[in-house]
Length: 372
Image (cartoon, one colour):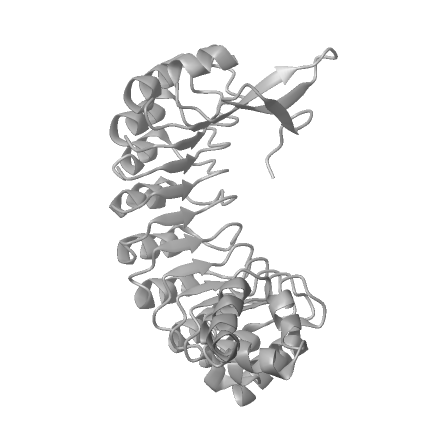
């Protein structure tokens, strides 16, 4: 019995605890002093701090990082913990810095009270940071990017989606300091121009994922240089209203592309799509939503060259494509799992449905489709 209590029970508790949510794991500490000591002695249980959408998250963060068990934390999520402020991150810098020496992932998405100063405070303590996300924060500027690149030299995954005050100067800093960057999200960073994007494309040649959603100001001068990204697998160009067939033909040189979003790229025609079909033989996801210049010729080329790989296809609003019924698309692309079609109801109004290969369907957006 003594061996059972001393060896077997702690091992079982560790296995079970690894599968518990953080909140339940923390509650277990209160059950008994023995259980507290047992759980606290396993560093692998305390590598993640998840305060997403929690109230009082700033104070919770400070309290947790003050506890010895979180001395080796690797992942912190404060996503949409909206009461987190610069003052909390300043306390972390001054009192809990040693706990963040091995932090690799930091998620500050939706923390809109954090400014450039907060970025400086938290990144100062995270020299090993690899993934940083600060989605939907208009208080962060190029100064915050300067703090980030100064303090964190090893970032390979960067999400600046919705940071509308980032400019080309911020991209210049990123391109000069993060040449091994693999993932970059610039969604709705509306102050960017061709010059800033080109710096990224010229210097960050290892990019595998590039999100340029809802950025309509770029031109072919920048788009053509996407062809330099030999490792690119994910590309979102939704709303790229200036993208031409010539530029898309250059992008087709990214032969590793598996996911390509061309929603509302209104200048694209069959010429550009056929170029993609000929070169991107690993394509799995393709959205042509709202492109009226593509016809059945595009589908025929894609079917001939990519039918074994494409599993998701969106042809909503492609009025030039006539072979758009479920059966016709499955005949062209037998491996489709999801495909999106436009249909009319009895009132002549449009809705968009996602059909799955198991013959089930469900409406994902009613009435007229919109660009958002």
